[in-house]
Image (cartoon, rainbow, N blue to C red; front, side):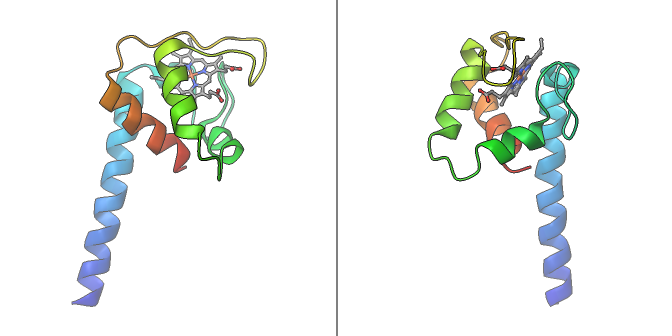
Length: 99
Ligand code: HEC
């Protein structure tokens, strides 16, 4: 019984992680970002490490997705992502910070 519960919990967890990765893919985030490798933008794992324990991170990163950002990781700016709805942006930020 316990084992079943743990397996179910793990499946649920990996299920949401996959859903958020799919969302990132469908919003073209992954054309500039990868999870563990810098491409045009920083690796999402590096972003998670940078903001670990930063209470303002979520708010800041939501702003970056909606309005764009620059100068944090280098000279290439991140363009605003107008196709991302606020609740999608929130899901993406939570996912990135959880990596
Ligand atoms: C055209 C390329 C491009 C696309 C598309 C893109 N990004 Fe970025 N992103 C960048 C670049 C370049 C940076 C680094 C900006 C900087 O140095 O401040 C960045 C930075 C970030 C950061 C860190 C911001 C910070 O201030 O530390 C996050 C989080 C992020 N992107 C998430 C996303 C998400 C989520 C999407 C999809 C909705 C996305 N990006 C789509 C290029 C892109």
